[in-house]
Length: 124
Image 1 (tube, rainbow, N blue to C red):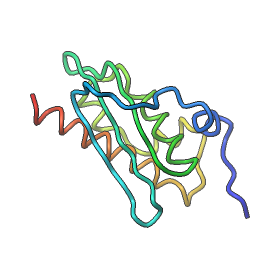
Image 2 (image 1 turned 135 degrees about the vertical axis):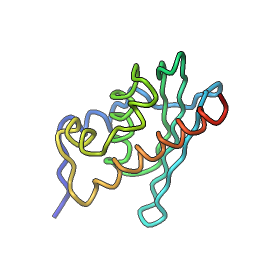
Image 3 (image 1 turned 60 degrees about the vertical axis):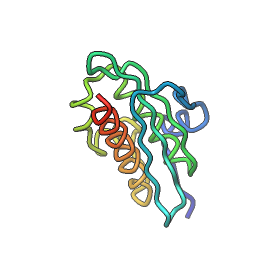
Image 4 (image 1 turned 180 degrees about the vertical axis):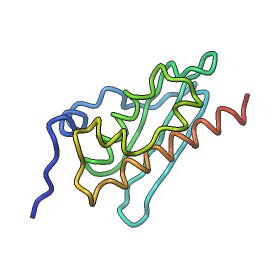
């Protein structure tokens, strides 16, 4: 049976708004899953502990790309400590659901974000 994705998920997959590399980032995080082959890179720009810009490069499936783009939408403008507490359920709700076999994609994006936040804090 083919996987079915919501219109919101497909919009974030076909037209991601936050894709790209950030050369002058304040924090970088990467997460990958060798089993499915997805790799997510997150770049954050922080000012006064607020994520003022966030970009991503994701190599993977529809759910991986859409999840990472939605993650960027959610955390842009958020305090880094609040962003570090984001859970996959909120991300999945914003995407208007994901097939259960693809929920790990939302977890991977959050792990990459947490690594970027840790990288920022380690440098500060």
